[in-house]
Image (cartoon, rainbow, N blue to C red; front, side):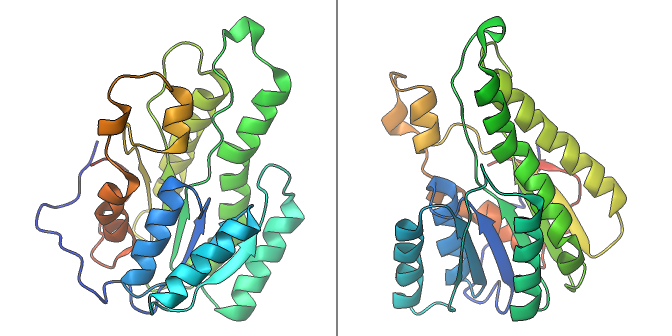
Length: 245
């Protein structure tokens, strides 16, 4: 696991004029990251399935006086290859490039013994956690290459124990995709890394362990934002690493 430099301290204009796409933008991590990126000067493209929550986040960013964000409603569970291509075309028409892509959207599924696992859940979890990041990344890679320095960030997890079949396999697939892309773009303007934030007080974490002692003491997504600001900034030099806080 890699950590950001202890000397890193984000200044107000750290991400000025950057175009950053965040998936799952209304979730625990997605909202915290979107607000932090906007606060530090980025124009954030908010991709989420809940239009009401996305519009509320849009208003929060705009009312704070941050750069005007963009909204792109999309349900990753049912999105097709064409949907991602259409999204990329609209980003190209509006901005002409993409400086950052952060894959925050995730589906937990239901922990169960492998022999009793549900096929439909397996497909749904992989669609959101693995297929969507693959299709979205592939559709926007040319836009990321247009940036002077671009950053692609995948979110992973360390639930490798029993009963986390679809979730665990999909997240390990994300790590493999990170390593593959990092190797392919080594030495280029595109940096590819992943983040394993550890246990954090999010809806997904509470859903996974609703009765766990100490849930109220877990760090919040906002406690991790400096890591994502570093990964989106021009200070970033690392490629092919898995970061934690």
